[in-house]
Amino acid sequence: MVKAIRQAGLKITVSLLKLLVRPPAAGWRRSTRPSTLHGR
Amino acid sequence: MSKSPHNAVVLGIGGLLGHDANAALIVDGRLIASSQEERYSRIKHDGTFPNHAISDCLSMAGIGPRDVTGVVFAEKALQSHLFDLTGRSGNSFTRLLGRILPENWGNLYGQHARALLPHANFHHAWHHLSHVAGAFHTSPFERAAFLCVDGKGEDYSASAGVIDHGELKLLWEQPYENGLGMFYTLITYFIGFVSFGSEYKVMGLAPYGEPRYVKELSRLFTTDEHGGFRLKREIRFTEQSLVNAFAWTVELTGFRPREKTEPLNQVHIDLATSLQQIFENEVLKMARFLRAETGEDNVLFCGGCAQNCVAAGKLRSQKIFTNVFNSPVGGDMGSGLGASLLFERERRRGQPFKADARGFYLGSEPGPIPADARPWQLEVKGGLHNFVGEQLATGKIVAVVRGGMELGARALGARSIFADPRAPGMQSRLNLAVKFRESFRPFAPAILAEHTGEWFDSTTESDYMNYTAYLRPELRATLPGSFASLRERLDFPRCSIPSVIHVDFSARLQTIRPEVHPDFHKFISAFHAITGVPILINTSFNVAGQPIVRTAAEGWDCFVNTDIDLLVLNDEVFRNPFQKTREEKLSWLKQFAKLA
Image 1 (cartoon, chains in turn blue, red):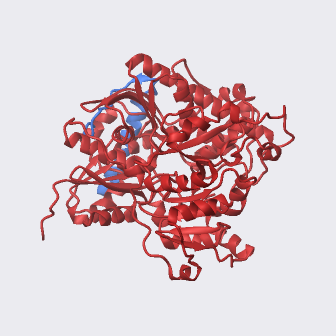
Image 2 (cartoon, rainbow over the protein chains, first blue to last red):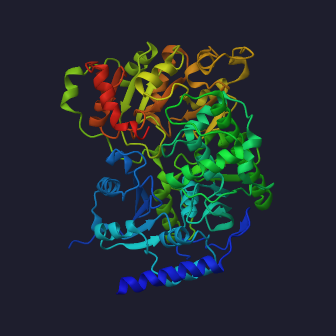
Image 3 (cartoon, helix red, strand yellow):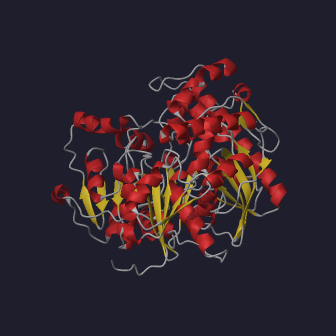
């Protein structure tokens, strides 16, 4: 049961991501990625 | 339970992205060991959890798994997993998820590591930061710009920024995995080199051709004046995805893919040359962009693409930056080392430190000599180095298994095969009867550093085959206008050391300094004293498809199945029994053929 809920949650998350996040243009872009080990 | 005498025992673990699993160990700030799992499992580019490598690192420190206080993975498994699921590169939304979800999610390595290392805290480093830290803390620089160009980080293919002792700033990145590294891999597969990690073979093939097909290959990607590069099709770093992209490649370029067993023809060779030229141009554009944006004098060139030492050589010769450093383990085989150094950097809160990489001899010793070898032991007169120098000067091929094992794909003199670069036909002999690999593959010269300028157009140190240099013009023979075949071009006597000089007079230089590689320096010095030539052929001690040998026993096994004349195991020398039939040798070779 828990596994099924997790799987469903994952599917929803992935669908949301695909819907909401558009691929950025090619080329260098300013990084927003943290520059430290623990930055997430 | 006894308390560990150490405060910080940090294990870096790399390979989570599916290949080249590796481990590195830092104890109380001192780099103890680093090695790759493939050397133990004997499966080239092995990507399974590096149990053996970890165990060997711990044993070199005289500690056990329960003493490990921290583990740093060289990838952020969660972000990589999200990218694989969605095909969308990281952004503020995935970062938010990264804060909510457990960071170990999707990390199979994490499960293995937890079972093995019960007391350790786990950390996950951005993949490219691991590469940058690995390069910076083993480089001579106090501060530098960095250019990390890779096949795949979690969700990006290239990154750039600046690093000094106090701070690391990631400034730019190119999202997605269909970047420059993927392009090189796609064409490498397309022209028939379908074993993982074969890009270096294509780099070696490139000088035989002309860049006739740049225009055709350029239809596959978009780029800009700063090297903002992207393939026009999304491809994943899986064999299936690459093969699926062949039809698209055929459609856009008009060429057809080469089967692995099909002979190489001039079209394949010219495709390799064109690919290499595009690659170099893109790297140089990226470097110019970085130089203009940062104003730094030094650059660290890292990531898997930095293993392309021809491009690294161009980066030097173009003088875009005053100084260039590319690590011998700039690719994923050194990612665990980089991750552990990133941890150490943050543990010291920006206090300056450099890791003593000890010539990158970071693995364990060869162990005991097998009993089978004893009947073939030779009496050594006049000292080991002089004896080996004399044998090499008479045209003998000598393998060496001695001291700590090298980290990375390049043999640096501890698990190496040495030979005389002057001997006619030595390149073919080594390729076909010793390494059992393609005859076109070049060998690298190891030269006494103090003599580099007498032979090559560079005097810059290249301790780890970092870059290619060119033979001085006055030492080159005049070449005919054209050659009838690749074979004829290869065999033409182009200089006095043809085995280590490529057909375009380039060489993947390793300069040997006594303070970095003392034992290797003695071997070459002995050869130099006899011949007047301060150069040896140095190639890895393995055959095609086989990981470099690790132990004395593996060295003996490889030795008796090849045409190497002499073997140095620790301080002793053995001659080859030459008892194996050709059929027996071929049968032995078959176990590695799949990965060749």
